[in-house]
Length: 432
Image 1 (cartoon, rainbow, N blue to C red):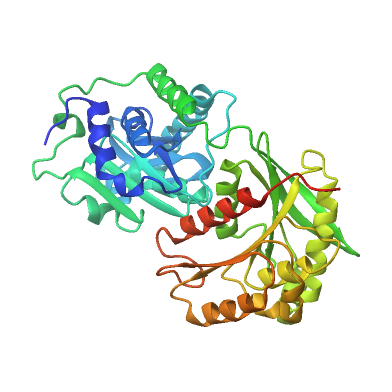
Image 2 (image 1 turned 120 degrees about the horizontal axis):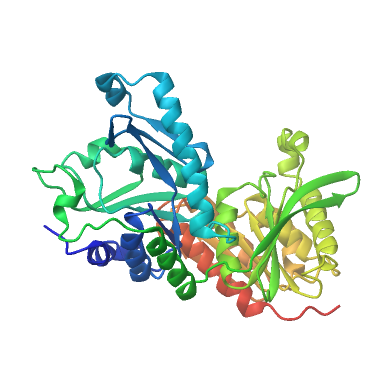
């Protein structure tokens, strides 16, 4: 199999990756040659495009031979086999690494300008290059994607050696390669046109992709502090341009601000024009006492305090407020929703314990969506019983094949879509 040029390879690779279309994907191209390929993949998947900045560490007297690679976020991959075979000293390695680090920083500024990197937190990162030779650069790119918070990493290339999967096993959750020939010598031998890609072509690819898919543009986040009695709790407020509402996340374990699953859902809400507040319902010391995790009245009080503070926060004042609860945080959201002064626009529970809200369920007036995994029978039964106690508008949505944590491929995307639709359908200007 041969390719006429990189864009043609990218189009064919995009067809192979069609199973990812419609999911929460960001495509990361390796500059420079991988970016034209990645641009076509991003277009095929209707996904945002960014660069994954990696610099090969070439052997000093044979630069095309990679002895490792470095990338953003301090990621460093060294091929000890090449080092031993070439006799490169620690000093030589350090000099090459210092030079490539300067180039990496320069290219980050050149390619992105003042624009921030596309956020990959909680998303599926599809790492794309025009081919794999030694695998060092691809390995570093996958590790960079994970360091940036990707929930899943897919490495996709048009061509690679026959032992591609063995070399990169463990570095990506999924490996996709169109052609793995026995007679592999170099990536360029499988392209009719393998002309070196210029920096201007990279920036042009990124600009065109940004115009087509400005996902997340204008969303700004800032750290906030929520005061609940004598306790100060950390949080993160993110507000996209033209936000139509704001969703407060409640997680019973106290990990809401850092939970990768909650961040994943929050990013999906940002793309729908919803602001989010992720904050810790418990301090680290409080969380150490498991009784606090099940003190629903305490958690509900913290959620109410956060909501009162939020209603006067610059940038979101006057917006309708919804609550997204997980685990015992869902019980706290429903407990709080029974408070006459709470007035949430809507409540969503993900794998929650609404039964722990007890008799207060009947007093909830906010439209409530209960989302449960089909492979979580105990919690599913508890949610069905709790639903029978609700007197408000409500729905029980079962995600087929999902366990309690929604770790199965595609299941958290379904949660995000359900929550997005529920909130956007019920968000209206708040009555103050």
